[in-house]
Length: 83
Image 1 (cartoon, helix red, strand yellow):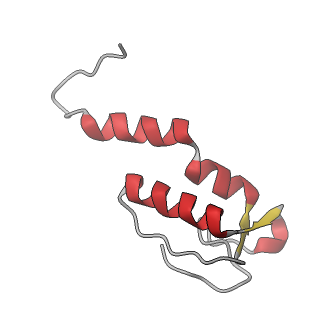
Image 2: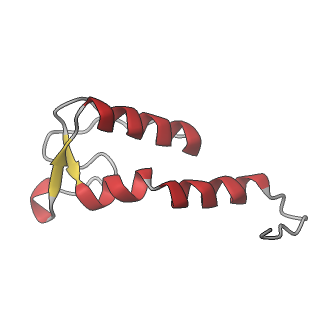
C-alpha cells in the first residue's frame, strides 16, 4: 500500500467522508509501520494524515496480527494445533 490522496484511506482506498476518521500522530504512524512489518506489507503514512478509525484499528489489532502470524507459521501439509 502506498500513500494516497488526502481524501482516501490508505487501508481501504475509500473516501474519508463516508466513516469516522482519525488523524495519525507520530505514535500512530509507528504502530502502522510495525503492523505492516509483521504483515510483510509496505504501508506508508505520515503524521497528520487522516484514515478511517475502523480500518486503523483492524490493521493494527494485535489479535489479528497473531492469527496471521500463526497461519503463516503453519505449513499446508502440517496440522497446527492450538495449544
